[in-house]
Image 1 (cartoon, rainbow, N blue to C red):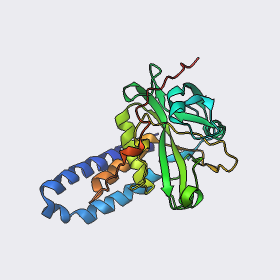
Image 2 (image 1 turned 180 degrees about the vertical axis):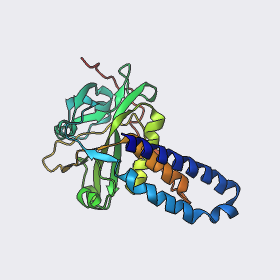
Image 3 (image 1 turned 30 degrees about the vertical axis):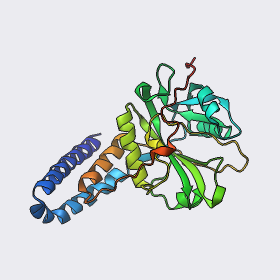
Image 4 (image 1 turned 90 degrees about the horizontal axis):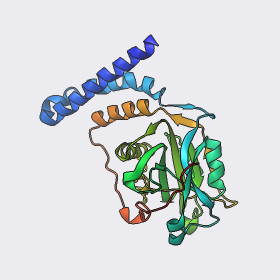
Length: 268
């Protein structure tokens, strides 16, 4: 316990130093250049320790998620989305995969039975839509440094020679605001090199993800549960030591469902 406390204090000190350095770099760029090598060395010293705390495998980890009341054997139509209702279930990763491959849609937890931004309550999952990828899902995962907790192919996977799949990252602590969700989402897509992916809809906390009950669906599960605090500390460090952070290019025309007024049946 004492060792853990000392590590946390060290990390906080280094993070504070990085923040101060980033401000100095903006105000006095000529001076700051002289210290870049020293900053990189310090970053390397603490990186390995924090990386080891980023995630763990936990098959028993359970979390709340909203599941559609109806299952679909096709991609839902606009009429289906308007009529779609949800209930909240307490699941583990295997349970969630079972719902997905049975054709149920999923989303985060909302209050007042309406899937709109102001009613967002919390989630333990970050959703990433990968559309029109030149790589099939398995090839993408082989080269992915940040392994998702769950991945699966969509109904439209392989059409026109392009691939479509979904990534889900489970976190050990709840995300309780749309701002924090967007921040974590942006970090994950940068980590998995999806800066220029077609569909940025997963950044919107109201976005749902459809299931896939087709026989040719491909699924992946690592049982990874990401440590939210360590992950944020790690990426905050990189944010303040990056010389030119990459900006995500959003294409909002694909987010037709982001503010749907969908009724959700209360959990009973």
